[in-house]
Image (cartoon, rainbow, N blue to C red; front, side, top):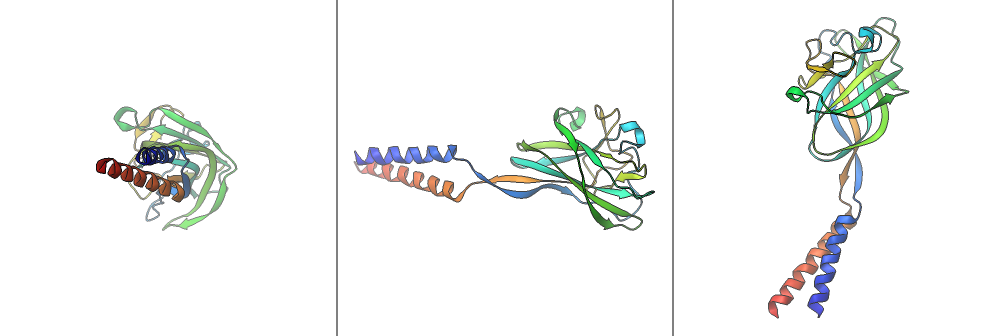
Length: 224
């Protein structure tokens, strides 16, 4: 009787482990810092002034596990009048288009107002770091694209090139069709921040207790 009770308790504890919520921690989900080593990279049409609003630049990123994205950041080169961006349109897409390019739209919206701070100064130009919050977006492990269009009245504003020279795409018709590489460059400087799930200590302890109960029950059954 004791063995059966112990077995039932162990099964219950293990089952509870899977239904109790896990906690999460703040994390940098993805980052591709700006490459400020040389020429003025990017150019138009990556804002709504240049290119008649057709300027979505997309960067591929990979998630090794589930994560919730809560904010987006990007780096922009500010020339001309020095006026900074006022907002940013964004899209998240699956990397399931032709050749692994952006395909199915997952989420979209407008990040406004932008939080703007002085970014690093490159060899030939100064930059601005922007960030904006989004409606929390939870994604499972896989390959995705984040697509950004800066809204600014400064026609000399453009997105900075990222350090990692791979995985970018540009919009050809307002964000519907993409092609590999934009303006001859292969990345943009972006960052994604949010939360990643981690098991709670109490949940881990519960799992351990459940497994221990199962082990004791098995030993008792063997002795019987």
